[in-house]
Length: 90
Length: 314
Ligand SMILES: Cc1ncc(COP(=O)(O)O)c(C=O)c1O
Image 1 (cartoon, each protein chain N blue to C red):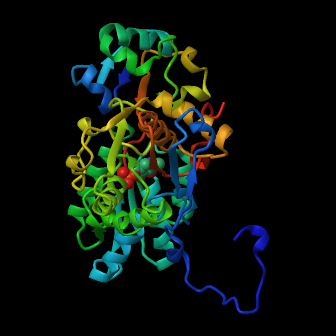
Image 2 (image 1 turned 120 degrees about the vertical axis):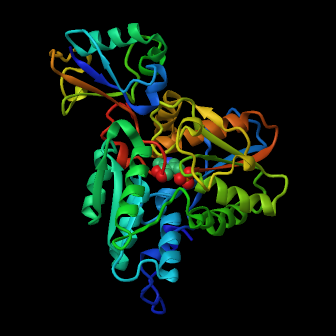
Image 3 (image 1 turned 30 degrees about the vertical axis):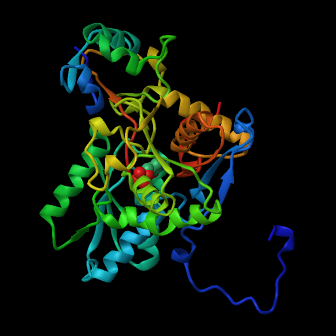
């Protein structure tokens, strides 16, 4: 099962979990599964039109999905997907 | 004086004062077109902090922290200056460190923008990348750990707790704004990173103008895209931050700040970073509620370091 790694500022919405096991064949499906498991996370990641918010970065392995196929980037069973926060403070 | 007034004269001495002499004294620029819907008696100004030699507001605290440390002998015996940073403070440390011959080590979250990391490397700083999932609080914890493990190697500058941070603004940003507005400023608005800008400038202006309102702003949620700013309720609280100076911070949404960044460029000719967009959103929100007044905020840096964010100026 793919694993989604959650940054500290979003763990308030995943019961404190730093990783969440997710199902799906691409980034979009994986995120949909995340928001099904933890509905309150949804408005933090997606805007009202259902698009990813502009500052949300997702990495599959080492690569930013912006340099791959965006939310259509395929995900394999063993992939680790990372949701990255922006930089805060100082 | 304008550009056309400039004439070479024989009596101009060659300046020998170097970079530190050029920190501060930044322009106070009016927002004109973005304020056209406000009452004619309301003015909004921003300190253009990218005019500093290191390119951001953080030159002020970095220089004051370094000069204070030198005076106290903290950097004797070849000690390295160590701190955590999201980028700008590191660039300022690295700039003055290179100019003054002080080696610099920085704990930086691995998700800091590529431009920032490249600039830090160009200036010769040693960089310790920290877990991007932990953000800037992860970098703070790493810097603390390095400092505790190697006290003979590092002097920990600790920008979040070092009073020389806010004092830099008390000694420069505050007095500049007082003079540049002829003491007419009525509202001072600033974002919260370390809170040094807000605390030092706000304290100085309040002491000289007892009726001045000091207004802080922060991101509207723990997960946000306002680089350089902190959501205080969910982050490690800086030791120098005293909530009583400004009361409850205004909250700025990332999307609103991003849209403002684009408008500032296109409508005011101001090519600035995301936290400047947030500052404009907050300052205009304050200004809209006034019948008359002079609102001053701070634009921490220019847009260059955000160019890898392809959608910002679309
Ligand atoms: C771009 C940017 N904006 C705002 C700030 C916040 O300034 P302060 O640390 O004085 O609160 C910083 C601090 O690093 C910054 O880099």
